[in-house]
Image 1 (cartoon, protein in one colour):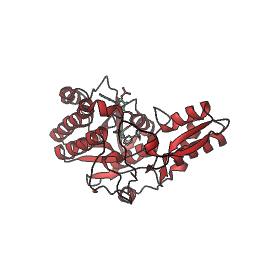
Image 2 (image 1 turned 90 degrees about the vertical axis):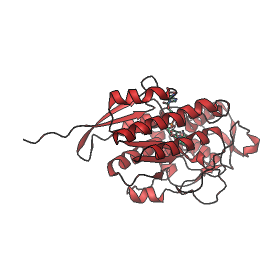
Image 3 (image 1 turned 135 degrees about the horizontal axis):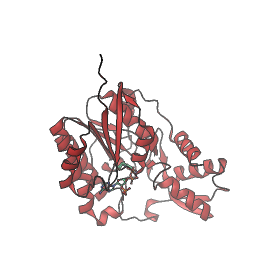
Image 4 (image 1 turned 60 degrees about the vertical axis):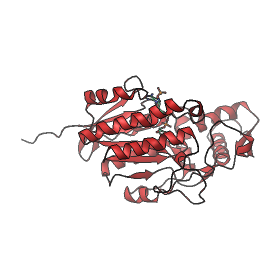
Length: 298
Ligand SMILES: NC(=O)c1ccc[n+]([C@@H]2O[C@H](COP(=O)([O-])OP(=O)(O)OC[C@H]3O[C@@H](n4cnc5c(N)ncnc54)[C@H](OP(=O)(O)O)[C@@H]3O)[C@@H](O)[C@H]2O)c1
């Protein structure tokens, strides 16, 4: 008589965030022939502002894999709340990583392109020097180091410019403003790559299944855009898909014309080649991914 293999217990934090939602939407039924049992935890179930409670909560849940999709993500507000950002994005990550190490479990720690200063002219490689410009980026970088140093089976997945039908993001803000205004000024001198959270979630499930050597991975959709390009594509597609009745006029502006509390990298395109090759991922251009997201929204 053959016994059924036990289920793979996977915890996703940040259940109500963009990536947390996308991970729940895309969870595979089986990973390597083992049934997946997903528990997506809200802030109420696992509060990353209380690192001292983390080990006890994880002990009661006994996950095999933790995907930490929760974070303090308010980039500008972080400048005035550096301690809270550090507790959530660094100290709690260290606590999760220590628990994983003690039980020999896998941790996927999601991080950001804002660990870089944006002074490079070609796409950032995973081992390029980190030099965050603000509190958010610094706290996320400290979280990466804590996750890697405390647990041998940590995968750091850096991404950028994330959007999804669930949650607050640039796409939804543009659709709202586009319906209200005749014209908009959008920053055209910051370059990066938009990332549809669903594609990022699929990449993470593939990583969990293939278990390559643990290290830092880069993932976004393919191509390059400025926020201006991104906004123009959102409006053009939204009109085509009849989400907006007409497109507002989009005017390019400089970062210096739109001061924010946090400084952002002028260039934060990630080099994804290693990820695409190792995980056999077919890159999707960001405009195609955006179109797919808008279809769901419509
Ligand atoms: N959004 C981007 O453009 C972007 C870019 C690069 C990297 N990333 C990284 O990608 C990951 C996912 O981001 P996202 O876009 O999905 O972010 P998000 O939509 O802002 O979601 C963040 C989640 O974290 C949760 N959270 C915040 N504080 C918490 C706490 N103290 N305890 C427990 N949970 C807490 C939030 O809970 P509530 O729902 O209760 O608020 C929310 O569900 C993060 O690691 C982020 O740093 C994001």
